[in-house]
Length: 433
Image 1 (cartoon, rainbow, N blue to C red):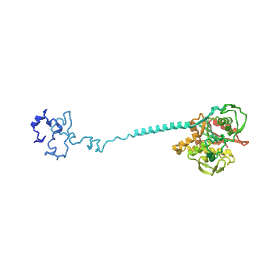
Image 2 (cartoon, helix red, strand yellow):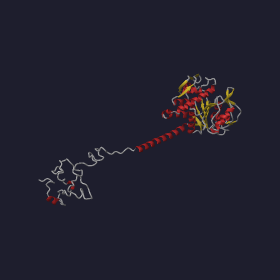
Image 3 (cartoon, helix red, strand yellow):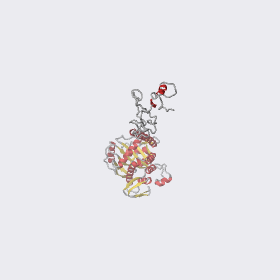
Image 4 (cartoon, rainbow, N blue to C red):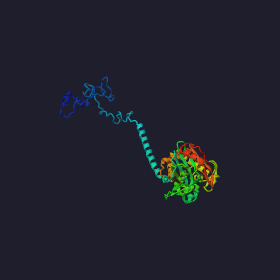
């Protein structure tokens, strides 16, 4: 029996290879892909002979549409790759993209695109958080004071004037807390501290108003009755105005006795003050001279120390330990509030949400402000107080000329100069006590 194609004769080729209907395969001329290679390609005896498997036949090329190998078909031994299993891109093939290719292509990361989208994501998250925080904080403000009911007001000057009041309100305090904070259990509310903060282009000024200041109660409209009460020339302590008819009468009395327009009103009670100090982690302050006061619970040594909420409240309320009781207390209040503002504005508070939000919550929950007060106004007040504590502004008491019946009398000439400078937003030259 003959082996195909070695035993394939010319006759057989002629018989079956040219359009024969026989089941025999086509001749090699018609099926170039199965043509036997040139002599010696698989170990022939010619000069180019190689051992079987020692080389791969030269691959034919497809030229000018004349079939593989072009017109020269004598040496067009064709290997499509399927005979050896060597197919480009197939596993183990070693072609481009195959696992065996050491230069396998991987797309480079598009860092510019990644950085762009990361930045967009961060900015969007920050914007959403800021907007949510704004509405959360704005909703916590107690806008309970209507300054539009204040009558006969002075003209508005340059800059912005805030009347900042610390009241002795015990609202929200339990009996145990009242005892711990040494607040007593008196009914009603009185002003424990009063300050005017002027914010302007020529520098910020913080002025303490002693609560024992002697003032004349002017005509005013009742906050609840709406009835107008005429002036009678009655003189009393400044904090009595607040006790008589609340914030609006206090604003009316300050404006009438000073001639200075009050733009915004801010009030905080005992509990809120202590909660803010505790939320911020305590306030560090340097006490020049130690003192004790059984009424406020104060017991301080000299030197730098960090006060918690209870200690801070005792520090700003103490007056019986000083010879000039009310004036020294106002100085302590200014000193502590400036230190508190500085402490709140430190990166350890602002950049730490576990401190920032409790501090904001404690402060906003305890503040009572006028109906026109915005968060921006409140922020402006806060930063101005921080600036005063850092030496960028002026801190002073009201100028005092003497006393009458135990009340402190303001120096009218100095007060007029001070008000003129504030109304014109000029640098303050008047010295206080």
